[in-house]
Figure 1 (cartoon, rainbow, N blue to C red):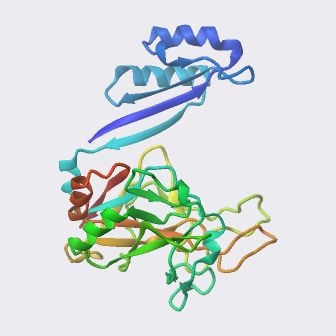
Figure 2 (cartoon, helix red, strand yellow):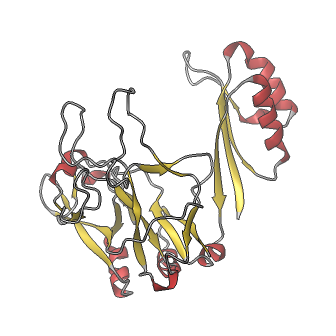
Length: 308
């Protein structure tokens, strides 16, 4: 695994020339960017491997000049490294597909869901797509803005032929015409227990949305919604083997933790629309190999660790 750092920051107009010279002195001058328009600011952005000597020099320069850089750290794994983990976080890194009002038309079985927020409800209807034209023309995978994972028909057919266990592939439908679309929603049937406390960069957001007088966002009853990711590095998913036996898991599972906000009923006063937080999807290396064999661009995988 290698680490790759993306660094970006804006440059004050009155200090542009001095900082340009300083960037050139540490061999970073070619990544300076002029203002995009008369109202914009000069900027800097580039990717660096963690071993690049220019990275530390750039951070020192930014700190010295008070530039407040944005940093994102990507972990790059080889396929062999990914196959060595018993479980992988699975998703799509394409731009998400908007659902619009289609979210309101989803139907759920809430008999086993949280009575306060609805998290854990089982979707019983097809997923309606508000703008089918936004679905990839040539791609084979995508996600919605609410976190639903979709695969193209050819991928769905392969997953069925491979007899991937404990997952439903449900065909999506156009919201306006109510016509079936050649895209299938991935719906795992098995929910894995909670992550270990040793996991990192996975947090639950319970702060008020706008001001301290607002109700907190996370459900106080089930404490299962409003999970998210925090920090410059990718999340570190960890499970305890005493709680979860990876060998006994199905090929595709969903997490107990759900991402996004659950709202059981429309709340016009707070401008909240009914909808439920979505779990993350985890897969075994067997599923990873299927997507690699099909050369599915945009499918992303992240390791899940197990500890004793």
